[in-house]
Image (cartoon, rainbow, N blue to C red):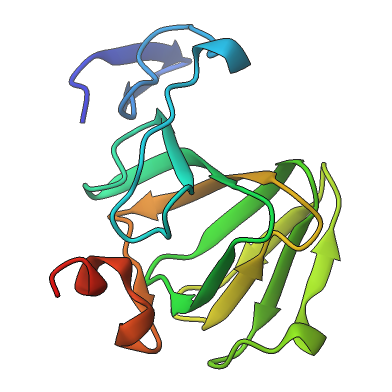
Amino acid sequence: MVRASETKKTGATQISRIHQPDQDRFHAIRSDEIKWTTFAAYPPGVGLAILVGDPSKPGPYTIRVRVPGDVKMMPHKHPEDRIYTVISGVFYIGLGEEFDESKLVAYAPGSVVILPGNQSHFHWAKSGEYISQVTAIGPLGMDYVDPDNDPRISKRH
């Protein structure tokens, strides 16, 4: 956590605040400045961009996930509650421990999807690439319902 703090006087009461990581100064991240990388738990071709915070540590974070067209993210769950905002494309998500196309629901850009922690779900970039923004309190976790779908395990074989 950033140790910079701000103190305000409100009448006789003092309020002291410690800034969250990456929030100790005004700045903006333009879309052309976003740095995409891979993430071992994602299928090949899926990109991750860390915007605010550090998802590997306790605390708030904001990331973007870019999934190329026709890629399926098989059933998995995250321990943390998540808020997804659809940035571009159509975000298809279904709930359950088995991939079932009939359970997919499509969300257009601008949609906000709230996913409670430990809820099994799956995604499919059914109609082309999509980008979603995820806000949560880390650390980020991702466990596949079927370990055979986990790219981290399949890479070891």
